[in-house]
Image 1 (tube, rainbow, N blue to C red):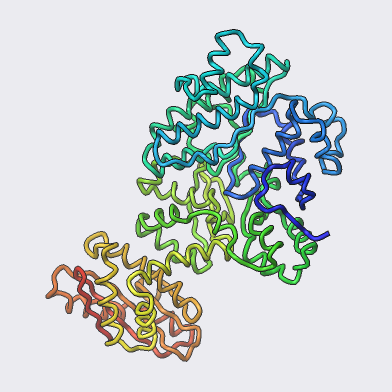
Image 2 (image 1 turned 30 degrees about the vertical axis):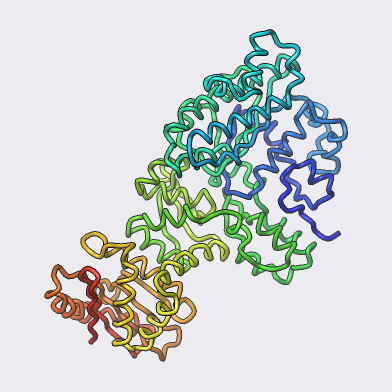
Length: 554
């Protein structure tokens, strides 16, 4: 039967009833039932099957599931454990709430969004109402009518779990999907501290000081720092992408992708699929992006499916604001290299705004924009070899750097580089001067800022010239370091060495140019080009003073 994944369907019952293709992840239920942790968090990138996993768990556990839904698990892997089904299937009250739609740009709308979700949740449990005393009915009414005081809203999940335990004589499972969506929005739009206070009480009352809780399971993109959102939760067990536990239950494994490609009759594209969508590492397991795989299986065409499901604006913002050392590392990453960085599983979101490099690298890793090739524990810290995971994610970065480079005039920007690699220096100088004047509104070329512009320029050059040239920057060669080396893939073509400098005055630009060219000679920067068999070499000094540019050759 052809594969048909029911793309966009994240309700487990609907998916099974549609007879859609389902990659069986039901043994997650068995693992969770055998896990003694009282609260478990699964941080994973978006569109990696988190909502579907919690929906599956709800339908298996919920004591209120309609009789036909009890057959949903027939012929699935969990059905191989009949004693487990007999003991646990549809035996628990379940609270299932998703916060993924609470993505608001101010505290008022965020709180209203949470109120509405709680209203809907309590409305599904109105059968509890008649058995309550007057005091509890008044509290229930306040949550239904959106008028409950904020302190009661914060305790609403705990309150509901107490009512469910009293009715069913069994403690409650609390499932919270995308718990961190409102937190990310609050950080992005500047009301993080206000929302943090509420969320601490909301999550803490439900998941820590709750005697009616059987087990809590949360999903999200990040683990927000214990010092912030989880300050009241010291009982939470986090299984991030770095953990070996539960590593196969979110995303697709190699064998699962093999099966999908075979069933979709696209096995001939298996290697391209690996290049485009593989590259994630959950624990020691290679994992594929599931959203991209199921879209590829349907369309039989490679494309950036996952990256098109969300905005990359936040990623672009982080890269633009990051210090020059960060951009320098990205020059390595975008050319397929590896950089080693310290990673923190507990993200402190305000630290990202203050350009804390560890927080930025951690954010990019856990949100799916980098992969950890290798991880070591060094003096209590995770140290990871980071890499861009696949061609799909590479396209995000390349499009961003290309857009920046071409922001002033796309056609002129490309002509400028053509003039450079052809050795037409007078034409290049004229166009580069115009380019600098039009683009330096983003950067001040002066003390402390010139390097930021320079790295952004190099990243643009790497992307634009990727098919014909390799770009190296600030690396050892001969007796020192050159700023930029442009290496042609055809050895008969021109190799270029560029030294950038910033002059203190306009009059000193010529002097700086002479010093730069002398530096290229004395440090023998052409050594790497010579070692590759490149003999046609152009040496350039590019000197900045404000928005004025001087280019000299030797």
